[in-house]
Length: 316
Ligand SMILES: [Zn+2]
Image (cartoon, rainbow, N blue to C red; front, side, top):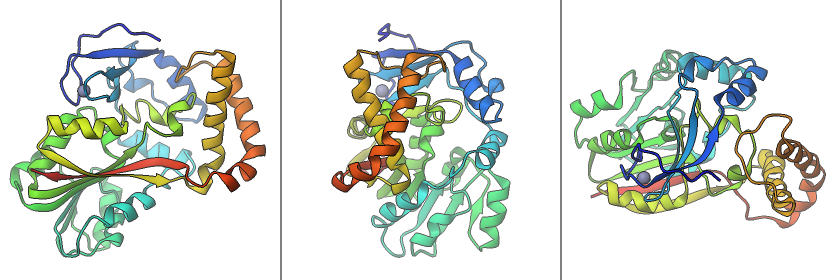
């Protein structure tokens, strides 16, 4: 494990207590994406990519941030099976925290599917993807192409709820993003967001390219949600992990088996390795084992948690 301190302050809490957990070769990520038919080299302008850990707020983040554009996300939708599968459970869990009639701002709302889960006459969605906006508007939804920064200037303290689902982990400046979204909330209003959890099986995976730039910039442990109360005027109300989806049974078990075998064999953990690395071979063997074992394993393992975590705060 690399533990050298780096100079840049944490992108969430601004602490200088930041260390590098792993130095990643961007070329590994470029090669993985190329195998999927997606070009990403234009996003990696630096030859370095570090996975950092903040010793203060516990956030994990990649620096320098390499951020994908609209065309990149369009390709993911076309070329990665089930890319948009993940949000349904988030919507169900979040909707339980929104009362009928409350005004709702959703940032990065896509086609506005969350509105199917809530009852309100006062909804606005912000979205950059013009195709998604057109679909949402056809459904009669108030969805506009505007940044949260511009929207917050015009709509201070106006909403009961500000929410974003699977958005925050893509944002290179999460501190600013959260601050701007809080500006739109009334005092006592609710901030609700969903991110992939770093406290689940995902953290044991090898070459999980979607959990790194240019897709994800940050990784969120539950500890971060508590620490965030020190950096923002918010009070933590709930942290809810989704249950593991059936379609992720094999993936979950693969990561879990890999983590056990890796420890037994004394192989140090690395997030990204080349195909000829022994940890990648072990990860593939773990896949075969998990295919065989998962039907039996999940007869007994009923409490496995899934990828997503929902967090609810109240604005002070
Ligand atoms: Zn921090």
